[in-house]
Amino acid sequence: MFGVDIGLAIPTGEFADVVNTGFGLNGVFTYFMDRNILFTGSIGYWSFSKEESGIKYTFNTIPLNIGINYRFSNTGLIPYIGAETFLFFNSWKSSYLSYSSSDSETKFGFVPLIGIAYPITPNMEFRGSLKYTIIFTESENTTFLGILAGLHFRL
Figure 1 (spheres, one colour):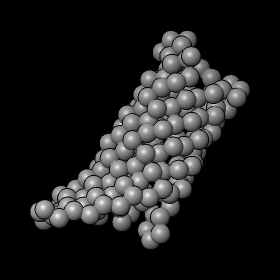
Figure 2 (cartoon, rainbow, N blue to C red):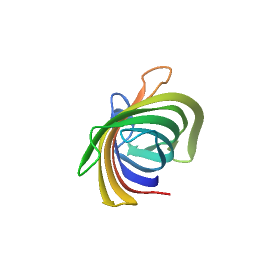
Figure 3 (cartoon, rainbow, N blue to C red):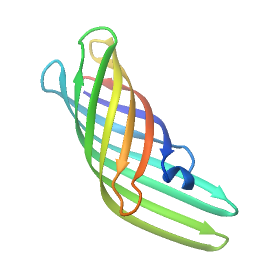
Figure 4 (tube, rainbow, N blue to C red):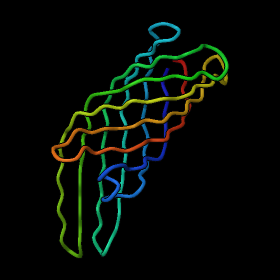
């Protein structure tokens, strides 16, 4: 299956002091290893920003992840749990008046998740999920809770 999930991302921890709620999307490929175990691969784009006292902060990340999901049933409303991991390509930018500073880095991350799937047709399903993203950084980890929804199609 292939699909696109869009959603909101609520920053948590110290990350919440620097940026406001963000938004983004993930393109997702799903391979059914059997009826209940799914292998996933995804790439996305997530953006956060905040302006305070004339200073604008922006954080963007491009997650490139692989994962596994376990589905608890195969019909009707299908709950599932899972986890994803791999790389996050991060960029920071801050600006004040005509001064600006930016940085970029690639970091490892881990994303536990829960979700639901609902088959709409034999070749299409709706998915909704909650994903807690943890990007491992030097000081405080960058963390946020993603609330996503999307349509996925059988290839």
